[in-house]
Length: 256
Image (cartoon, rainbow, N blue to C red; front, side):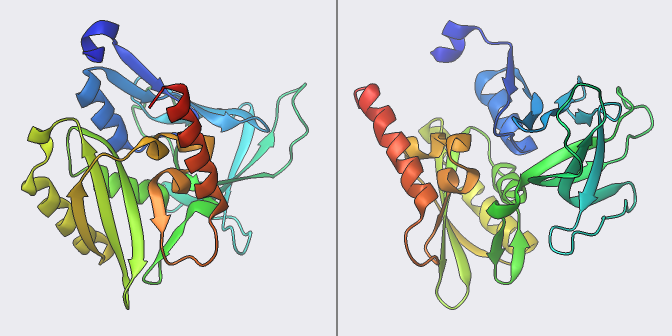
């Protein structure tokens, strides 16, 4: 109903940026063109924007971009045209904030411009906040890569939540909400289970269910609070508490 009533043609996503699989799901659900629009922060302003090819391009005239290893703080060299690590920026234009080698706290994949690109500057993929990285069976996994692996296996998904637990090894329970019952297929479950086993060596179980309002809090708290329940953690999870409180208040306002 909403798709017909709103007559949407384009969705521009900003704030919390999305993986390509989430973008594709948005396009299929709404029958639109969807983009990650702007990347930046209040401190560093706009560090990148999308163009027609849907890549987020940098502004080398305005900023000097560096990728560093967040542990050693050493520069990460470009290897085969790309580098992965924490983004550090220095502002170059007059009248800007005097930020010099400012650590953004964002885990980034920087790629050199390719031949024939619409815009000739390097592109960036935002892989999540450094603090949102997960260690699963001794392997560090980024939010972006988990989401991309999961959501690229399905069509018609409204969202997901992942529960991490350990019974001798780390395992995942994945809860998916779909647009309709016809989308709740055994094929999708089989594809997800196989993808996580093949790519990450993780055992997962998958079920379909309504997820509730907490998964829609997104960037209001952080990625993990909206989509991850880590039962391996000891003590209270303050970010999850904040997300649950936002969700409760939203439901009260909407009369649910």
